[in-house]
Length: 276
Length: 290
Image (spheres, rainbow over the protein chains, first blue to last red):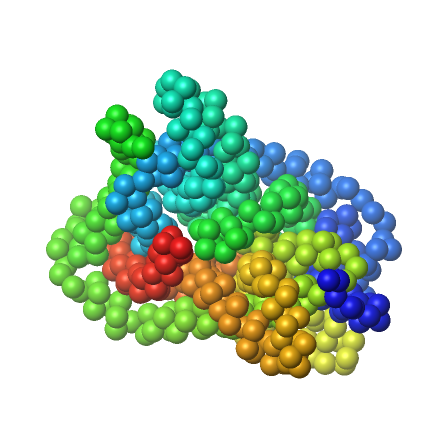
């Protein structure tokens, strides 16, 4: 039964919702617009919303001044690297727990999740010292290691909830037909699990890309991903709003687009399957 | 049908994750506990000595600690209040039929996907700056004196920025929960003459209670360790007015090089987080059984 909704009401709701939506989105829109202004226009009063001389100069400036590309690549390597390694470690574990559960499976899962609850600052000191003593400080390898570890519980949990939804009978049928364990994984499970794995991959790239505790504390000029690079704009060094905006726009655009494509998975991943 | 063969294979497959997480959980934490009982400053290497509980008593009698504890709670509670109330309102709004619902959703979700350093710097410079910020311009439009947010209300400003980032999270989860509410139930209530308000109180809110709990618990875990937003906006100041526990430990460790003191602070933060985690784990544990 279709609900009777008067057109008038629908229009009011539309106007209110759009207004609030645009207000919430406004800082991002404003950053985007400012990135195409000159520094003088960026702080002009009254500010101009659309009617200014659009320029892409800031984007060139950001690259030539600070080797933006290096930091961008650091972000790419660290977020993709940590996510892929995490998946390689997590897929067998999640598979085993989903399809051959034992009495302790639930406890193991809960324990894994509990490692995520430990505040990073509780282990900041030893991590910093260990990294310093092993030369991992300010290296991509070091950041990949830490981000893999902090996101591993989420990866396992997400995969587990997805794998749980795959009917176990199919695996048994394959087993009856004489498929070995490795064949079972490659030919039966993997194709069915691809959507879940893809969602997990997506969410974790987002989380790793935006991670801003370890990246800020364990990296400097060489391995700094965009989170840490952008933070260097916090020191007041004159007029820099337009350049900050250009650097920011490039830093957030890829993840914004990825995130919009994976709205549903966001909810599921971030609540550890508690809300679907 | 778990045969002996698959069971041992299963164990083998779980082993790497378990071992890695076990190492990650035990090794650094044990080191933090060990350091917390030492007098150990990086500026004076080789001078480490056992210090008993003096790091803890130093931390627990430091006025900055209580300020940080208060600020941590203020950030958690302030952001929770804004995001839960705002999230419920927004979720109810977005659940209504409208034109372009998908696009509004995309607009509302966006702040959650922005990296913390970008979000904080954009707010700090382009909105809250007392000279060039948009808020200053708006104030001047109305003939008011521009307000220096980060100097005069640093904690409130941080709360505002963090709330902007987390509002989408609450909205998204509450909206998802709202959409699973049975349409027929709502209609039945409507036919029985329940008004919009009583439908909200007796039907919608109870249905959302689980999702609200999840939002509160998960956000609390993250909000206890807000860091980047403070680092790039106020740097904990003025004084320690916007220093939270995470930032205090960071400053003690990497600015003052006091390994012992920072470790004691870290352990205190771990204990606090564990109290919250305990309740969250029970919540999630229940869903595993379902």
